Amino acid sequence: MMRTLIMAAALIAASTGAGLAQDVAKGANSFKKCSHNIGPGAQNKIGPELNGLDGPQAGTVANYSYSDANKNSGIVWGEATFKEYIKDPRAKIPNTKMAFVGIKNEQEISDLWAYLKQFNADGNIKK
Image (cartoon, rainbow, N blue to C red):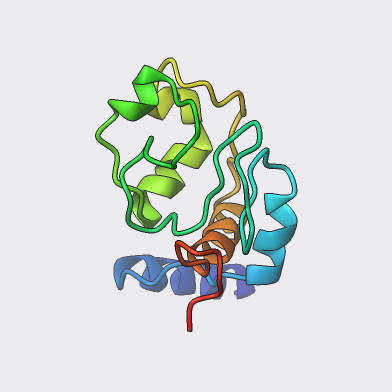
């Protein structure tokens, strides 16, 4: 009975467009896997800093040497694009320099997006 109720609730949530609850703290923990910086004073590392990730075109962070594949991908970052990309970066952008196998867990992806999207282009938490 409980299993049926859980399945029904999941189907209702999916059919109404409701997403997974997002946990910023868990997203911050997931971000520790990354070769990126974010927040005030963030600088490019192995990967570009990710301040203001929600909205810009891929391959446009200043002073970072992107692959041609990334610069020419035409991707504009947003929640749906990020969630698709982070599952398998090399499938989304073949020949990208990003050497990351991806994250398959939908909840972890949602949590990571919740963490990333809170930072504006200056690295401050959006109000």
